[in-house]
Image 1 (tube, rainbow, N blue to C red):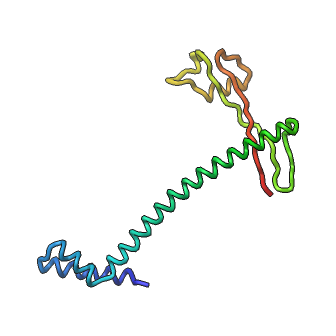
Image 2 (image 1 turned 135 degrees about the vertical axis):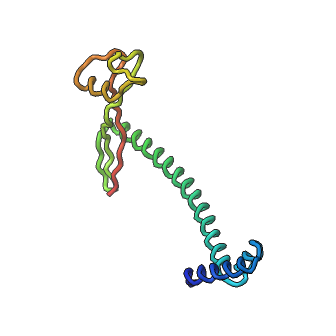
Length: 152
């Protein structure tokens, strides 16, 4: 294992010596490469960076494929749950599959009352007003549900 502090100390000393003697950058770099391990370490680290970047790209692509497969399988479980008879929960030895209500989502259709307007509709205020029972033309709360899978 290379002692990096010793290598960098040797490089700094060599650099200072050669620059004091008037050598240009090309000679300084060539001397650092031939007389120290710095460039070997540099090359190894650069190769690792490249390998890590390539691995990260592969991992992201694999993650996308896995997420897409999980989505397809969740859709299929949803289909099976509906086929069974609109079950809301099914406990099996490998997993519990159930529907969970999602938070209400505001949908705006048409004009919004002026009191709820900013430069864009004030969705939190509209949602609060609708939840309090106010009738706001063109606004409604909708509730969807999503399938959750808990494995044991």
